Each structure stands twice: as C-alpha cells, then as structure tokens.
Amino acid sequence: LICEEKLFFNLYENTTSDPTNYNMLPTPDNGVIIIGQVRRTNPLDPYDGLISKINNQGYTEWSKQIDGAGTQSLVDISRLSDGNFIVFGVARDNVSIGFFLFKIDALGNILWRKDYGIPHVGEAFGKITIKEDADGSLFIATKFLENGLSFSDRVLFIKTDNNGNIIFSKYYTPSNPI
Image 1 (cartoon, rainbow, N blue to C red):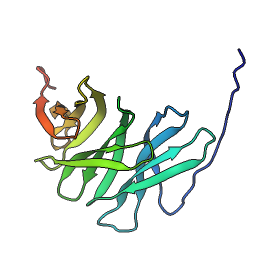
Image 2: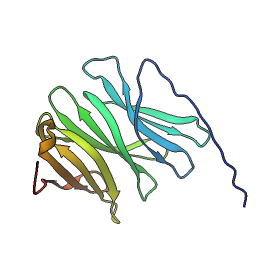
Image 3: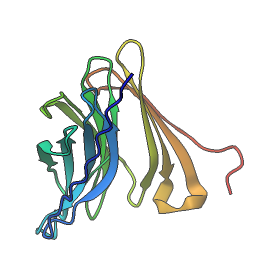
C-alpha cells in the first residue's frame, strides 16, 4: 500500500477585512470548509460571517459573506446525513443578541436560514454543539451566560426540525450555581 502525502500551505491575506477563523470541517472530497467573520467598514454593521471552501490543493473553491443587521459571526458547522451542512451563527447589535442557523449544500448555496432572537440584553454563548437525529431534526446545545455574568451560567438546549423550525427550546440551570 502506497500512500501519497500531500501538504500545502497557502496564505490567505486581506489586510482590509481582518478575517477571523472560528471553526473548520473536513469535507468528503478531502477539502475543508472554514467559517468565521470578516470586518466591514460600516461601524453600525462591523462584521459579516465568512464561509469558505478550500479544496485538497489549498485553493479557494468558493467563499461567501453572510450579511445581516449588526455583527454576524459563524461559529460552528456540522455535516448532515443528506450531504449538506448546517452552520450556527451569532448575531449582535448594540441592543440585542441572537443566533441563526443556515443550511448549505456542497457548493455553498444557502438552502434556508432561520434567525432566532434572545429576549435579554448582554447575554453570550459558549461552546456550541450541533447533532443530527435519525429523522433529520437537529439538537443544539450551548453554554449560555445570562447578562454576560459567569455566575449565571445556563445550558440552552434546542431541538429543531430539518428546516430549522424550533420544536422546543429549554434552559437548564446548574443545581448548585456559584
């Protein structure tokens, strides 16, 4: 058995947009999808989400900015059983925070997007986990800080159908909070 090892290094530089990588996921074709955010010049809308597909030679196949009101940050991505991908993003402006999900195909086409508001100001998300159930529904769990205070930690647990419609959403508070 002979295994050919391919290594590549490409520098992706854009000094005007300050790209930030938050996560990446290998693809079945030995490429990778990278997600994060990129700076804009508008102070009221400072960041857009950024999603890029890099092929197995290190070249960009496609790249898209995800726009919305305020800052849009893409923070987690998972591959689904149908071959598509689900992306979790966080949206913030000066008065509110929320999150969104969108489903993309292998070419980066957005199949659907759902935005979800959070009723309190000053909250933050921690590590996000997305898992697909056998029926295609999605389970999302994340650490959730009420008013941005670490002593008010909660877990936010959401189940959606395969189109991102919420089936249920619950907060769980530790039994012995600090």
